[in-house]
Picture 1 (cartoon, protein in one colour):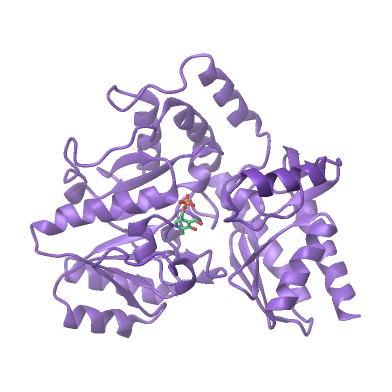
Picture 2 (cartoon, rainbow, N blue to C red; picture 1 turned 135 degrees about the vertical axis):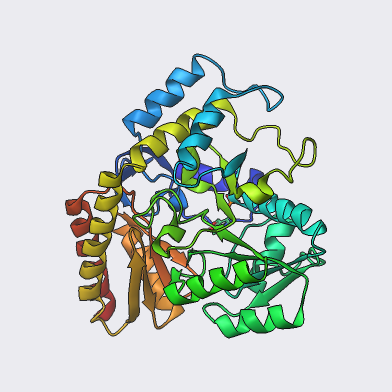
Amino acid sequence: MLKKNIEENNKFIIGNYSRYPISIIRGEGSYVYDSNNKKYLDFVSGIAVNNLGHNNKGIKKAIIDQLDKLVHISNLFLIPSQIKLAKSLTSNLPRYKVFFCNSGTEANEAAFKLARKWGIFNNKKTIISVTGGFHGRTFGSLSATTPKKYKEGFYPLVPGFKTAKFNDIESIKSIIKKDKKILAVIIEPIQGEAGVKITDKKYLQDLFKICKKNKILLIADEVQVGIGRTGKLFGFENYDVRPDIITLAKALGGGIPCGAIIANPEISDFLTPGSHGTTMGGNPLAMASGLSMLNQIKKPSFLNTVSKKGKLFLNKLKNLASSDLIKEVRGKGLILAIEFYEQKKAKLFTNKCIKNGLLVLITEKYNVRILPPLNVKNNEIIESVKIMKFVLEQMNE
Ligand SMILES: Cc1ncc(COP(=O)(O)O)c(C=O)c1O
């Protein structure tokens, strides 16, 4: 069956992914099972989507209840569950407003379009992103994405994007000094795709002040770290700054495709009727599922456990870092990485972990990214570290 799946996948599915020859067919909590009923600890979480693990009771009930009522209707009508989710997302962001879409790249496109609309009146056009930044695959978001590997073969991209150096405030300052048309800066509080690179606190706070002083919009791309991943609802809350636009997706829909922007009241109304839209974005199914996700994650007591588990996990990983193969381990909350000295060792480690029943994710060559569900149990963290230790010992032999 697996052999047939591989053959037919190659025959019918466009080959833009190199897939593991594993067919996962069901999941429960932090575990998934493949077509041979082999059990894996899933510390990929659908790349930071399944923040409450698999088969979460609340999300399942919300989806089933909604299926009985209405799946899709269109944004031509009022959608009460959109209002509820927007209210909940903005409970600590007074007067901010929300636009719902379907994915992270779409959220960033919406953020750039809103920024440009606002910028017309200030004659501002240019958007700055930083080295290593990943913002999505559609043309606008790809233009903000800085690593060349994502862009090769797709030029020409959208004009009006510039790159500053990550965590280097002088680099941004010098661009702003030369270009009086800077409209916005987009930044990930933690760069996920770049290998879990954490934005410095002082850097982001200085950037926030510079943006305020120069009337430049600060866009926080929270697609990967939003919805509780760092132990706060939004990653930027670790920095005591308030972005003008926050972009979300991945975990927001509880596994149903969903993205959003949350925008500052001074700019949100620049997206006037007809200026932007989406057919599917914010549909009742995604909203029902998203509401259940958010209600469970938003509780301070839950977010505290994410921070605690993150600390436990990082400490356990630090014990592994005595291995000669590992350069560094780092993380914040439950987004963590092991950085290897050699790319091929990172690959080998990932493959061996998977073989031994632990799903982790290679990212940006040298880094193994670890994204457990946020309700992971302490004993599951310990189990994963045992597997990693075993794999490292094998690799050292
Ligand atoms: C920070 C960030 N922004 C945007 C995106 C794009 O999201 P999507 O794949 O939903 O379009 C991603 C996806 O990995 C991401 O990590």
